[in-house]
Image (tube, rainbow over all chains, first blue to last red; front, side, top):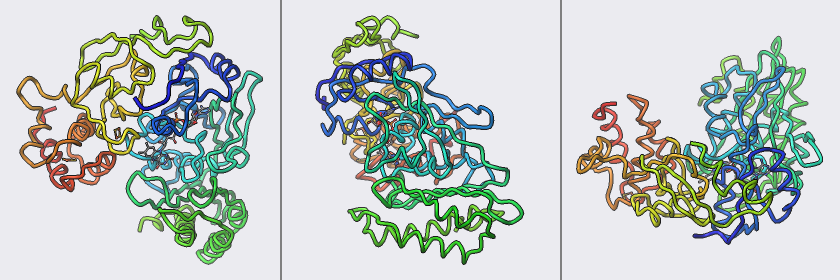
Length: 298
Length: 176
Ligand SMILES: Cc1cc2nc3c(=O)[nH]c(=O)nc-3n(C[C@@H](O)[C@H](O)[C@H](O)COP(=O)(O)OP(=O)(O)OC[C@H]3O[C@@H](n4cnc5c(N)ncnc54)[C@H](O)[C@@H]3O)c2cc1C
Ligand code: FES
Ligand code: FES
């Protein structure tokens, strides 16, 4: 038995859960898939007095489309997302949402994705995690509930830094809402990691909508290059209205990389990460803007 | 199936925010129902090994990296070290012990025997269940798919060649 003692609670409804969170606040941790939290408990890096297991809460999981908006419940398993939303490879014409399936497929191994949840990955906010980058690129909205009610949070406000989010101790992440992207949208997620299933050294998520050969909307975010998920609104803005020529893409990637401040650790130096980010960003954008998506296949 | 309704885990039964440190759980393991009290911080794999004596599931890293503790929870492969036994209340667990029938090895196990799919055997239970999940509903899996599935199970002995060959052989020999 590895974790320090805790009290275990398994609420059944969202109302009950937020009630318990209000009561236990800082002393409590939400237990979702447990794929990040339980290792931390086993190492005793986390010693919460109370665990609130949300796996039996009704209305917290599931993937729905409401008025053209995709709504993914917090306890939806990563493997479910991968199965339901993959478009069979990068760059497919997919309305953008396949980026989520693509990102989920890069998380750990299938055993991990069977249990790990969408909400857990977002709330954990590992700077090298794929799903936070995907929801950022897609311009999603995170929905948090407390006893006081519901609030909607944009990704750049939600991801505040190293394993830090805008969630208050009494708040439960309930779902993530992803807007629809226009017809002609393609997405691409590229990642380099040391071994299959490892966190990304660098990952790039890109979504691009094209009409008549020009970019009409774009979203770009990177994992592994900062203290948190890094959105690249300048790259997106630089593409909109333009014909996405390789020259332009290379310039935008260079500009971004010059401004990045990636970490140096055992998984890669800052210089290596910066170079990787530049290459992956170019390839992802070429792929997402090409009609065949062949650019990144190499 | 909804045994959680009447168990102490239900906070409504234990008082709104009381919380518990020990719970009586009812789990179906390899087809048999077990009802036992268990401290809430006991992992599923420790429960299987120590409380039920099912020592086929191994414990390696206890933080989700090695896959030695792989079991099937409601027919899907999970890390037994990252799940508390209390979370399996009302669910079905399958361990490596369910594969053989008496002395007769499962076709997967037979293939591992014949194609050098193991050396020390520490990783083998987890790998067998991962392979079982991969092949159960599929025929003709590619080597790439096999290696992708195996990425979640560390083997320090074999170099994986024999494991991949064994799974390919089982794909042919296992009638399903
Ligand atoms: C071997 C291994 C490899 C991995 N590889 C990767 C990888 O490549 N990429 C990757 O992104 N991740 C990876 N992970 C971690 C990933 O699998 C986790 O699933 C994810 O980080 C957390 O999700 P979870 O559902 O397991 O959450 P938990 O571990 O249960 O919780 C994580 C944190 O989020 C909080 N939380 C969870 N749900 C909510 C909610 N609804 N509201 C508020 N707070 C909440 C918890 O309190 C806790 O602090 C890996 C894990 C392992 C063990
Ligand atoms: S013991 Fe569970 S993954 Fe290593
Ligand atoms: S056979 Fe020894 S670890 Fe795989």
